[in-house]
Length: 321
Image 1 (tube, rainbow, N blue to C red):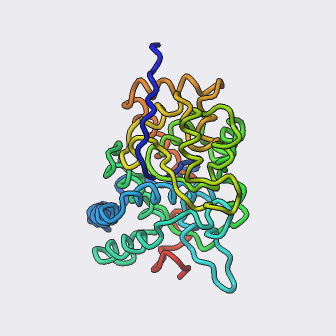
Image 2 (image 1 turned 45 degrees about the horizontal axis):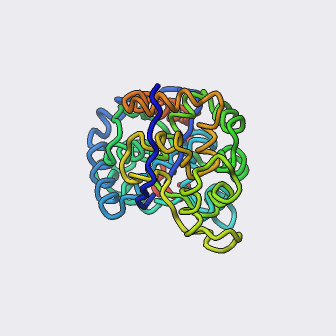
């Protein structure tokens, strides 16, 4: 395969990640065909408005879905606020000061409830919104399986332990995805969600200062807005995809081949290991990436859903009824 020429040009801006497991229950693409056929238009319209206000929001909603699904399955547990007697997942290490877009999901819920009040779960709203975020930013479309209900519990410890940290090596990434029923192939494809979005300095500092599997000029550029000292500039942002952080395509993988992955966990996918060939295949074929990403997203959406009489349809996505 011909070597790809690595360019040194840098443009600025945006974030994300993605994940999966199995336990399909009775989800179906036609679940709301009769009870709420207008759900798709309502979600799409609200998401278009949110992304028009801030393009980064598409990546944030996609990441919200991933972080929700990796803890207790896709049950909207991440959307629950803490109360005096209830500890949710928002303040767990991978989420605190990092996950965002809750107010957008509130707006989407409001739009859906105007069409068919009390019918569509917050978990399903998040699943549709994640798909629409990808499509609006130029990525592939797919039919979302629906029929999830919302949990009445959350897991702070699950959020701390199940979501792959940005310091993960290939083995840890593979095992954390496997714990959710996702293969290594799914993991590499779903990591392509980082073709949109931004990351905080605190999550890429160690990679740009300490790792050797990184392009020197790229590392220096990222260092300029991320001081070496912890606690200084921790929330400064940098784009996960160097070229087009608000367009969903395959540049993320092209950057990995050039040693320009922003996170340690990103670059681990192309670092002389078992996933190098898959990364190269996505560099060669965006359509192959899109197809595998869709497969991974559908599998992730199948992680242990609550269906039937389990869970509830929340009136407010932030609290239990």
